[in-house]
Length: 156
Image 1: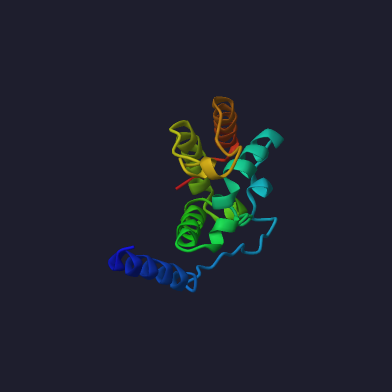
Image 2: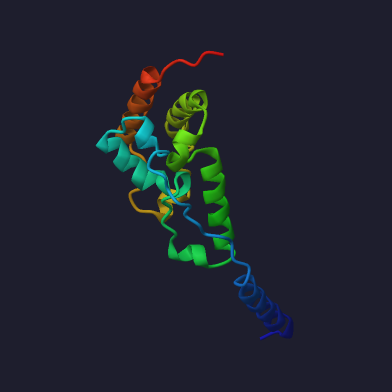
């Protein structure tokens, strides 16, 4: 085997091992039931099931951290995705947001699933059953539309 190839492989192995020391925080903040989406909105069982299997890992404080979230550099990407998802929409902290923002977010949820932006292209590949069927999308959109209609209008 070529000396440069051996050195290159050794360097990659050493870099991979060193990268394991740099560990992102994998947290699940405490959940206050009064702040969860279910405290503010009626979430039917079928919608709750869809959210649990396709959305909660990135959009709640109920993340189930898979084994690969312990292996750098994948762990960095997973932690980033979860942190970004929670900052955009967090079902565990729904009640802490502005109600008008929540009304807008309901419309955004329907838009994202209809355009197949969520749950994203990679997540369903790694999480069996996380992909949304056309029926799931219709169920989620019907719910978001009825929840938007039931939410009180905000005055400015």
